[in-house]
Each structure stands twice: as C-alpha cells, then as structure tokens.
Image 1 (cartoon, one colour):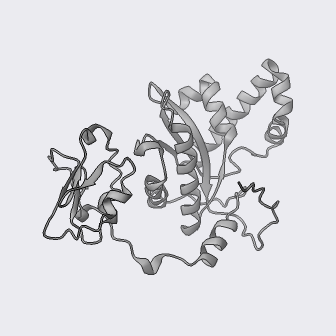
Image 2 (cartoon, rainbow, N blue to C red):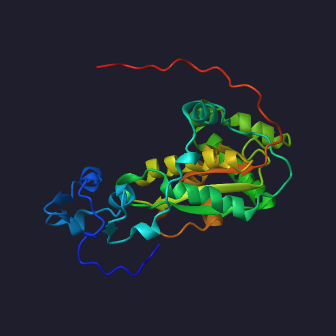
Amino acid sequence: MNTSYTMDAIIKVDESLCITCGSCIRACPGGLITKKDFPVPIDNSWDLCIDCGHCVAICPTGAMHQRSMGPEDCEPIDIHLIPRWDRVRQFLVSRRSVRGYINKPVEKEKILQMLDAARWAPNGANRQVIRWLVINDAAEVHRISGMTIDWMKQVKESNAALYQEANLEVFVEAWDGGIDRISRGAPCVIQAYGPKDERTAAPAAMIAINYCQLAATGLGLGTTFTGSINTASQAYPPLMEALHMPEGYVPYGSFVTGYPAEQYHRIPARKASDVTWR
C-alpha cells in the first residue's frame, strides 16, 4: 500500500475521470461523502472515516483517492475467478474439521497465504485488531497439548462440575493412553489474539479464523478449532507464560492445521435451517 498520502481530507477526486455516478456516496458505510459538482466529504468526516476503502473499490473509473489508499493500491477483481453458486455451495458444505494429520510440516508460505486471506475478513469498524501467533513445530504443538491436559486435570480438582459437564475426561483419558485428542497430531497451531478490552476482537477473531479455515482447503490443508487450547491459554498460567502473549493482549481463538491423513467422500447430513420470517 502507498503510505505516502498526506491528504487533508478523507477523499480527493480526479475530476477528469469522475462520471458522477454516485457509487462512492452510496457505498460509504458512514455516509461521509456527499455530492456537489463532484463527490466531497462531509464536515467532521476525518474523525469518522474508518479507512475501509469502499469508495475507492467501487469507483468504476479509478477517479477516487482515499486518504490511506488510491486505485493503484487496490487489487482489481477478476470476474472470471468468481465461482458460480454450485461451486460456492460445494466448497462451503464440503469443508470438514480434520482430526487426523500426516507427519509432514506445513510450509511457511502456505501459512502466510492463509493469514493473508484473513486480512479481508469482516471486522468491527475496520479496526483490524487481530494478531496471530503461529507455532509451526510438531514437538512444540505436542507440548502445548500436554499443558492443555495439565489444565484439564487442574479443573478436575478445582471445578469437578465443569470437568464433567465439558466431558474433559474424554481428552484426559485419551492422552494418558497415548492418544492426542487436543492437537490431533497436527504440526502447527495458530492462535488469534487481540487487545484485552477491544469489544470487536472476539467476533473478529472467529470470523478471521473461519477465513483461514476456508483458505486452507485451497492449499491442500486441513484445520480444526481447538477451543481447549484457547481456553487453557486464558486460564492456565504455565501455558499463558509459554505463549508469551504481549501485555494487554488475550487469545480469542485457536486452530490447528496440517496435511489431512484422510479425505472425505461425502457431505454429512445436517438439520434443516430454522428460519423465522417476519
């Protein structure tokens, strides 16, 4: 992205290119653009603009420049790569949580591709507060799984009701029997974290992780949520210390990824959608 902008308004318009179609006005989430002879920002827009770039992205002629980006900074959309509904549906409904992985490291480049796609996940007011912790070492992932089990055993002593309600014995007994039901043998665990007091962080993390999981499919990788690791990393001091979370930040979600040991051949049945129309 061009970081040399020194504009004194949220937008500037190339009047030689603008066709006054009004797309930028209609697309602005905050209604911060109005029309005179050409689109102009409203009063007090500087403090209200969230730098989403929708005004630049929607302009058909490349006339719009926003204070943090211009058309030259925005990747053009290739309509030939937009899949039809049948392909979109197949892609979405065929995604499965993978709970078995082969002994093969995940390339750093593929991890970065997943995380790069998540930059465009919806997030509150375009705050972009989510950060990522990547542990791409099978032995270290296994160690974190063990610490998660230690937390579960501590819960058994301190909160027997929770231990039973959450069926944590399923994980503990398997671990004690030599089976890892925490990381499932995956070589990589990724955790989304953000500011402790940021109200948008929790939903933003979940949506971003979902983007990563969908992106992983196109990279030949499998993923699954690891709520137990995330919960333990919020409540178990030894694991919190091992993860070296920055001061003032907390984990909001985690998942493991790797190359699937097996492939699915069918889409399992699900309950019908429960929809209320008003």
